[in-house]
Length: 409
Image (tube, rainbow, N blue to C red):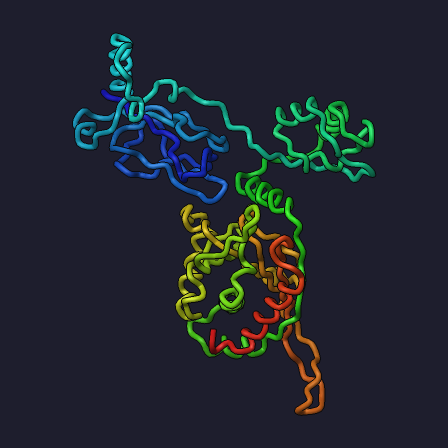
């Protein structure tokens, strides 16, 4: 009976590995074509590995909690000759026949583009994550110059400079030596620890890359009473995040240079006002992107936004849902936080944050008395190479002005 492999698929053009989180089959299980049999987690979403044809599960090589690279053998199916003919799938036996034929005629050019290589079916070791966070105690001196020997040891251990920045160095000028690193690793050997998820590692890597730029944050209190009054009369009701998102997009249309990014000696301006929304998930944050926000009304965005957030929380976003944003909006006020300094993604210049609304007494000249008003902190963190404090301040003021006319959003 022919045998067909279940391989770790290419889940996106920038995804090279995925972690198995659930296996839904066992040897002897009958499966259908395109049936989801293994659930895997990438740095961006949870996805399913499906079968190429119908058959009976022969072997399961994958293990839950282990990360495998694209092309790794996850299992084997026993299939019928009729199913092979019907679906056109390649089999291990066919691959072996091709190799035998190629070995008998080595002078002929081999077409390996669609050929199955038996080596790719050997169980590959788990992929070691490229970023490993370490808890570190406070120190008075940190890492400065890193010697080639130290760099090589860090590469072996999958460490970044940020991971060793708080280790007290005993080398010249406070330099952290290999001996300092090894001593510290021994020191934390017995500390409680857990493996970071692919999502956590992706967030860590993105923030590390973002922090290589000079970032700054400015804030402005904004009154939300008109927004809240407008929202009460809408059905379905847009969230506060959507009001801010829409006002942010309209403000950027008026000043597109603020959302450009620096590339050498050029500032590249946005070709579309696609804006991401930070969504908290179980072990990190994902940022799905809403397209052409400047061209859609609040009503048009409400259902689209709700559906996108729901898919994000179920980790069912496609890779395309996470690409192409020029800026991000984050509502940290949902956690009761009144202020914050959010960090933009590495490929974006701006991130706009909204804090929790707070009732405050505000003087009214009309009634000559203090009246209660709902205020929230609006902040923007920006790449200071592209935007200056004055420009960021004007952008914030314009967003605040637009929020005072919610009926026009």
